Image (tube, rainbow, N blue to C red):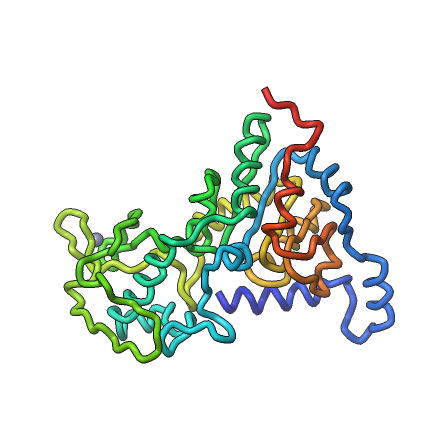
Length: 310
Ligand SMILES: [Zn+2]
């Protein structure tokens, strides 16, 4: 994952305006010429004509629902951040601790709700599908808030907190149990002074496929793991046909959007960013709407006057 991020950032910065870093004068000129459009009426005209809309969402959408990322300043579960626990090595070393972490995150999601951005996306999909138009959501978020809001066409490139994968037979299953297994009941408290529960591995979540009983793990993409190639193929197909791309709650220069948005933009397809701040690369995209996406997105995706609803 970090490799993708690094590669994409480098590609974006190299491709940016087609200029070398030394050409600062030309770069400045390019910046001034290519300032993105923040006019909602202009965006709405493009939106009204779009038949296939791809919406790439990142952590910012979840953050507006109060979902913690366990990254950055103050982002700790006990003494650790996500990048120390969300790895195959951490799971091999201490499956009990990693399961406590994920159990905590699953239970926490019971109290979190989709925000106006999730809802605007889901409503837009439902409405446009009646007009023979499509919306696909490509997300790195694992909290299923898009699904909870009603999104149907959802590509979860990092998997889901509510899916498990068997480490023996590989079976992937939906799992909404609370707690996920009896031994984790009441465990997973995030406070730094809490001791590990040290649950024996046989009492951690186990596979229910007949005759398997293998250890289950969360079906999420951990640091150091590659993305599922079937999902990536689906993403590629969607990006190939989209005629409007929205980047929501993340930046087009940050993974995962950095992997996808530049190729869409290179086809001449409009890309619109809805996030807190512009970055230098924002200038490569058609539209930018700064601010919380729960505020900016609902009016952007509301019914357009030209939409005919049967
Ligand atoms: Zn199994």
